[in-house]
Image (cartoon, rainbow, N blue to C red):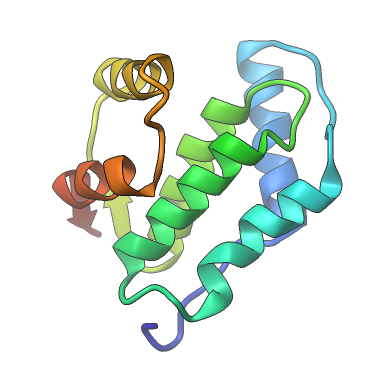
Length: 127
């Protein structure tokens, strides 16, 4: 695991969720706080070799744990980007292609670490 990684807190991800719901609509609220905590802890396990792997783990966990009542895909994308930005990187991708990529993975039921990681690596850009 890389040294000095900055991780997101529950409060930060809740704020991201609240902002996205206020901006794009949908019912607010957490469906399961334990699943949110679990998703945020996963990148910290020490299992992942680099920041891209940690970001893929976070992205997958937020998507699949479904911790919020609504907006889980949006939160997963934006929280992953914020996590990367905290650590000197960002996602360089336009919203429409990113949305199509996620919807495609979800429709094919393959929205997992193995499919997210190469896509993230392809779209990472140093700040």
